[in-house]
Length: 412
Image (cartoon, rainbow, N blue to C red; front, side, top):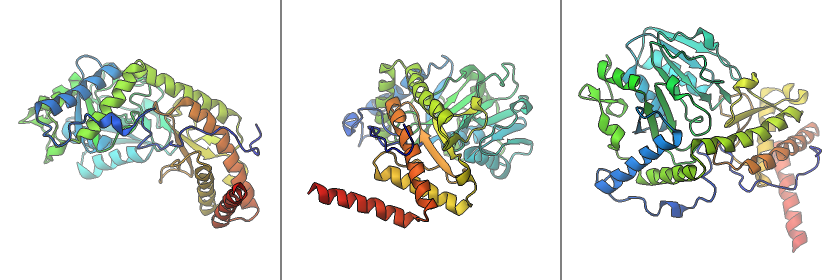
């Protein structure tokens, strides 16, 4: 279909936000009817629901039997900080950063803890740092999938089995959506509001036996805030991994996560979720290969994220625009897609290059991704024509509203 022709089929859901992401298909507030609200989370019934959530996480992800799972404060950010503050300091640290969140972990290690022996591996948006340069005699901190950059590590082959240090992987937009070699990772973190479409506020931390032993053998030299401590009286706080959360959790969030995990079980667990992601990305990948208007922000095809798909405008006309005009074009493309009820909340991360970011995680229907793609081309072609004709954002929006008003008048 020509990008000038207005598409007919629209996505059933216009929700393509990268986080919080859309709920599972068929979700309604009735899924939360049995939430243990108004009760102590320490009581037997509510605690059992927390334990059920932990058990389902372990099962759906097919974790090794000796890996443990805890629900912690502060979303994925809190879980990563907990790992860094509780576990680092024994040996040197290599930290990788290629998007905004990786940069946060670098800054925290150097400026907040602060650690003395830190080696950083930094890359610009769209690129990975040199993975072969990472020293696994040190502890290693990295993001499995850079949500803001749409760049992921291609696999776990770069991580040796006989590493001396721990591997700490921020995996919030990878868990439940990508194949993860658990034996290569000692700490994995995620939040419910990414691949599960859950609610925010809580994070999840997964520890290998090596990470658990580090807690037992290492006392950090810095003051430890309670919400960031994996230890209790100098030993691993095993109760945390048995449903005794550090602070009061939202039982609505817990019940919502259980609902999403039950949906995942009915699809065959993580493998069923990954299959949905793969189907969405196959459509996205085929479209990018043919459209003249968009390209992946990730330079190496092996590192393109299948979940947080970051797109840049690729034609020469856009590239030659100044930064302010590029942002105006982006706003107009988004406004047009929103006005057509096709997609909302798809702007690139605020620190990333100007472009779009489309969530293609498990809760998004692959058919919706396929239906969205011709609309992206159409919206860009329409926007470019308007700007080439000297039309500004306000005029463009006015023309959309005038067309809609004329249509309503005609209907009457």
